[in-house]
Amino acid sequence: MIKIQADMIDPYETVLTYIWCSKKISEGSEIFSLGVKVKAGVDLQGMNGRAIRLLLPESEKIIKAIVPAHDSMAKKDGNDLLFAICSSKCGEALKLALQSDLNFIKP
Ligand SMILES: [Zn+2]
Image (tube, rainbow, N blue to C red; front, side, top):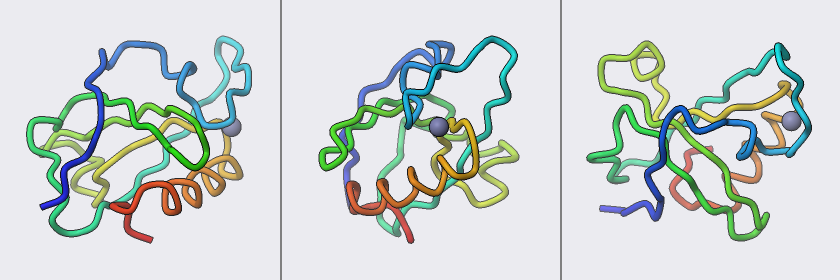
């Protein structure tokens, strides 16, 4: 069993603080989400339906993730963690960083 080191945060706490590129997002700009799967044996117990703050040690960034609830569409689509991103390009960069910084993310 792999325990994730993360702080629980208020899901309504602004996503923009923890967006990957720290780009300034103006009100009304579109925000996309990146969904990732975690490896087998990763313990997300008690985090479902919650927002967490993850430290990416290599990238020296803190990023917010949503752990979808068991009955959510995101979970049914196979996502274990969701991240707010500004564009698909940003999402690709984030996904690479997640894979290199966090050993529990599935490639
Ligand atoms: Zn971005």
